[in-house]
Image (cartoon, rainbow, N blue to C red; front, side, top):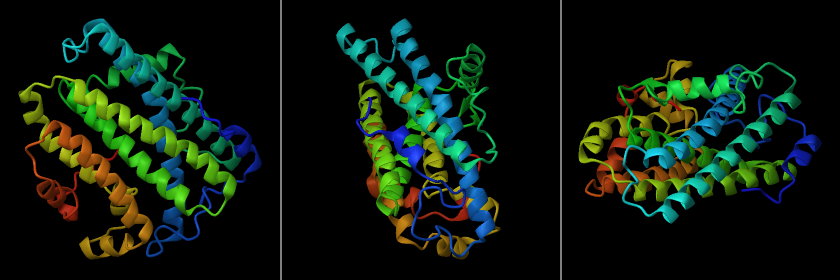
Length: 301
């Protein structure tokens, strides 16, 4: 959905620094090195750009598959009008993601440095070569991890984990930025991401998911939720040789506490759609009260 906020004009009026691109009032990881935080933001910018490029293609692929065979029969019970509306709404989400991709190109260009995983000429949703690459990868990977014959449930729960992470991030950046222009840019993201989550909750709720798919996916879904439950959790662990106590200290800020609350709330909502028999206390125990040894470091978005 197009926004009334003149995002690209605002980007032109802003300066962006790689060590703090959204002008947060203080460092996010004061107990870790400043070099790590700068590299973390560089990595995060590349991750976001590549992710937006990928889902710009993937969401349209899902829409096409729903039209072709109701996505392996998962939506065959729905009438045509409902299916057409789902597809229209999904293509609108894909358009949002492509606009987000262009926004991050604008931000990266203002930084005037090379960002790994940010190659607009290659990661171009309009190019068939990139479309073919994405469509090949999603047939055998979920969140970058090999999965034999990933199901609709595998892909939708991975998408909802990613969208929940994105919403938590932009909400916290929006709340804490000290720059009014950047706050408006972030507001446009918050509006979009909240709408995307609402759409995918509805899309998941309307699907007929076989019990065998639910049983085989449950552990994998929980692992992915855990691996993304704090802002940039996996690189924080991998690049700083932390133990459970120093990890706790690294995230001892209001930013991280509130990020986790937003993320956790949205992940519980979609998990509960699929597994209504699973108690919220059990979910919280698995996805909040964990140790480093419990984290699948290959499960980050």
